[in-house]
Length: 125
Image (cartoon, rainbow, N blue to C red; front, side, top):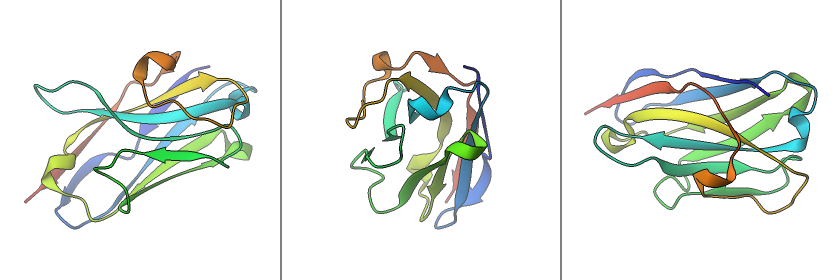
């Protein structure tokens, strides 16, 4: 499966953005999908994940209540709605896919087999 993340951009603090992760391949609906981010000089960190059906999600504590992950399997797309953005949310955001029809979603990058190219989100203060 090939993934393409888009929707990043420059936004003021308190603003919103919606990222999309578009996937090729008929089996994408059978994959869990996660969003990770990497800020300059920092390690890649988990942001949010959703299982294959959309029935199970997980969020990093730093984004709970502000970000929402969802998916539309008919469109082979996973979304990350980001509200109340903060300057510390500035990073390159990556989507990743984890094969498997599981309820539990993984929060570690090593569990994900396929990665998109990343989209830059910049939040100005």
